[in-house]
Every structure is written in structure tokens, then in C-alpha cells.
Length: 275
Image (cartoon, rainbow, N blue to C red):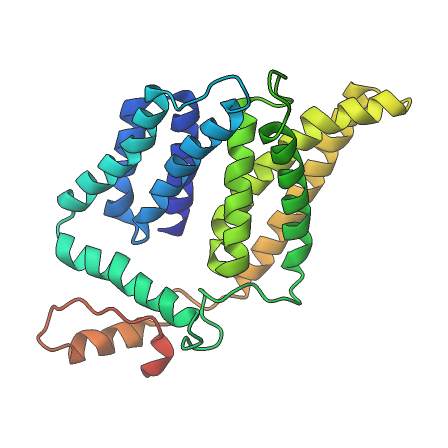
């Protein structure tokens, strides 16, 4: 389900940029049918509207266009339709929305158990390295574009600006809720790649003897090396994980001891059960 939710968010971003109403509606409807935290589908839509206002505000357009509001509302209506189509809509709303709100409230009330996936990012964590790099790059380009002088042309396209806004939001969200890293990484990776391949060669070739093609070729080699290294690390981690049937006895125990039989069990800590 996590891979699906990440894919749905990326598709939502893509269809908002391309302004494809029907595919955007279809993705929004499928979100609550496949994943619990479906309200995340509203985040790209809300940031799309905010990005449009910030990008065109300096003298180019004073108010939001109806078209922007229209596409921003599509994920909201798609989410409602998807929830209504859910075979157990009441249970879904309770588990996906109400319980998550309680957990988040307890998290920041210091009542959530240590090590939960909704904890804040550790201050001493090495993840702060990439978080700091992304924040600096995103904030610099966003500030230069959003707060430019009236009548001046933006330095980057609206699509790039919107992507950077999403990157900045999910990176900041990762600081508060570390689980959000699975959404921050894809948008941050897209932003960094665009900066490396579009912006960096222009400045480096301007002040050095290296040409744009040489720099891009070097970057391609670097990316291939990084992907190969990450693939090897991922393969190593998968080989050291627990077998797929590790919690089989736990599942059977829950099924045998649920009263009445056949009821849904919402429980996040399998270690409480014998296995």
C-alpha cells in the first residue's frame, strides 16, 4: 500500500501539472480504496493552488484563475467519491482519519510509545544532511521566484516552482513526522535532478573550461553509480529481513481469538502477540 500511495501522489502531481481532469479524478477516487491515509491526496492539490498564487502574484496575475481552483478541487471530490465507494466506509473513516488524528495528538503530547513511526526526526540523525541540502536548495529558488520584483520574469518554470513547493513541504513534514520521508524523497530527488541537470551545468560551464555536455555526461555516470550502489544496499537489506511467514502464527492467533469471529482487528504492535 505504501508504494501505491507514493505512486498516487506522484500521479496527482503529474496530472495537476498537465491539467488532466479525468485521470486526476480517477487517481483521487482510487486513493481511499487502496490506502488508509488518503487525505494526503489533498496536499498536492492545496500546494498547487498556493504555488499558482505565489508564482503569478508579483504583478503578473492578481487573483487565482478559475481553472486553478477547478483542478485544485478535483482531488477533494475524488476523495469523497472514493470513500463513499469503499465497501466499509464507516470503518474506513474511523480507522483512517479518527485514529490517525488521535495518534498524532498523542505523539505531540508525549504519550506515544518510543520508536513509533510517527515520531519526529531525530536531531542527531544523519538524515539531517539531505534534509538540510534540500531545504537550502528549495528555499533559495522559491524565495528568488516568489519574492522577485514586480514585472520581472521568473527564473524557473511554474512546474519547477510547484515541484519545489511540494519538496519543501514534505521535507519539513519529515522533520515533524519521520514517516513522511517516503513522500519527501521522490519529490526531493526530482528537484535535485532538475537542479543538477538544468541549473548547475549553466553556472559551472560559465566559470570553468568544462562544457555543458561533459558535465551532463559526468552527472549521468554519477547517477548510474549511485543507483547501482543503492540497489546493492537494498538487496542486502532484503536478504537480512524476516521471512514472509514470520507473523503467520500471530495472524492465526488473532483470527482464533477474535470475538465475534470475522471482525476486523486494528492493532499496530504485533509483538504483543505470541509468534
